[in-house]
Picture: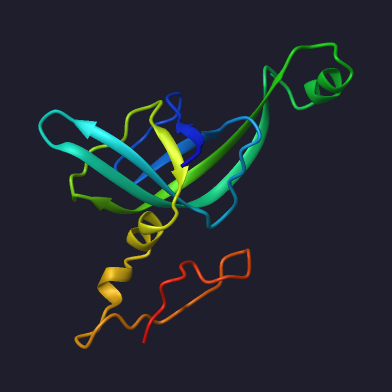
Amino acid sequence: MKRIGVVLGRREATPLEFWVGVEGEGLLRLDDLVVVEGFHPQVGRVRYFGMVDHVAKVHEGEGFDTDTFLAVEGKIPVSLAYVAHVSVTRILPEEFFPPDPGSPVYLAQGEDLELALYYEAMRNQRGSTKLPAAFKKTGRWPTSTWSS
């Protein structure tokens, strides 16, 4: 799994929401599902699953809106910050403490994607029937394990 970013420390992280700093050439979009692993000595490993519900890019180093003109002309130094807000949809095990700032953030794939979408709860009494509700942006089902 390739890290897409880290939990930000300048913004508050709670058990129900946190901000991600997207790194390098990384890409997070609205409705992407992510997973973060946390740890606490009294609890052990905890995984946070969530959905991106807000993305933004801003110049860090500007004090006024019109500073953008100066930044574009190279007259003041700025850095581009790409951030995403994540609403937590599931925590395993259900231990409600926040992830640590700096914790790596990954796109949910495979088993993590199925856990994020509660697929195991969609099984009926006869087996593993799943009801597809949407396509991913790629035009494919979120998983290739559909059965009836």
